[in-house]
Image (cartoon, rainbow, N blue to C red; front, side, top):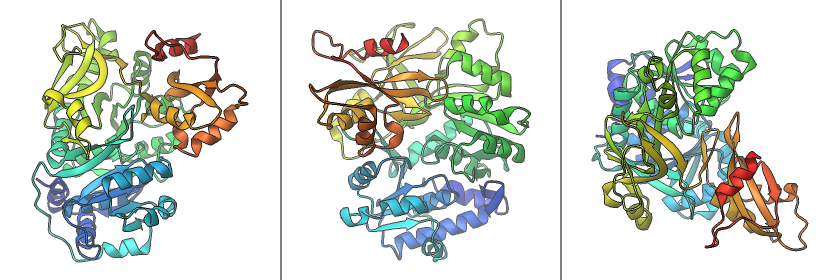
Length: 508
């Protein structure tokens, strides 16, 4: 089944219902949404000459046109490549070259930034700003019929960095996306026509994936005019739209209820906040429940198993009588309806209840593999199970608690940051002898990046010098918030840097 059928069916059933909004203004109903996507699909396959299976990148800040472009890509039998709009130009270059994208849809400022790549990348033919007249004209092309695809055909290519090497493209099929959508209805919440999701988090990530259930049920996709998360703006949209829903990183929950704008705000329209993408500390979720009521659902997933591994349902969060309530709130819930989850040892054998091991998962939501990376695919999907790299343990009731991230990933503001990438960038500075990057707790962002630096003899390094060097190579949001200069890195007998010891130093 082509996942674009979700839109086609809803447009036939509820053509006049509002579908897309920009701030408090409705910009398209479902008939208009579907018609524009069908016209753009016709242009993609006709005037622009794309073929089934071609990759189309979406490098956009949150914008209503994201949805039209996305469903046009799927309707045409093409592959969507959603890309984090905050990345560095070098990172955009790598992803576009690796996936062989022939076309990019971008918001205006990003289209200008990307223009230089059209001359560098042989496969990249067109960069279209969704705010230009040329793009708007393409939506008026003759409609393309919904293209027939196999459920295992590639639909969504999501680049998720590892701790070593370059970013990897997780290949998600139409079946994977449908499984994630159906699992939402099984384990997160139900929806009625007219409910809405407010995209304060990036549409190219979890918030966008959670837009699909709303489209399936005739809901409204609301894009804040800021294009992102502003607590005062978000609270104003909640007051405006009944049955409003969100996907938030835990840090966004904290920022919302800590904002001066929260005092006296009307949040009665709030239906549910689904949170995930990083650890939610027990004290923080208790504070959030006290502020907003028990209108929360926690999900644990990865780009390779989108939004779907375990979940802590609203009923579980509401259950104040559970004798182990503290442990339940600190967990990531129980395995989702459509997957099997295990905790295994180094030999992939299941470990007993209470024992820590690696979390592995299998089911129809798990990716097909990594784009053009057979070695990583074989390692990550060995034995038919997705090996998450996360360490955790089950309790006797089936609740999973994560203990550590075996790959040392840092999650700041709900965004994954991988230390190796930062380390490699800083090690290109001639004054840096050694470096190790770790995460440190931050009350607003969850974690922040800290770099321990061993200077070369005679080098006169400053944080400002390293910051400039870092931002010349990778996105600004990944750069360390503090540089700590030390004589040597702590290491074990095998020469491995002891990051655990570095994290302990940060607590002193």
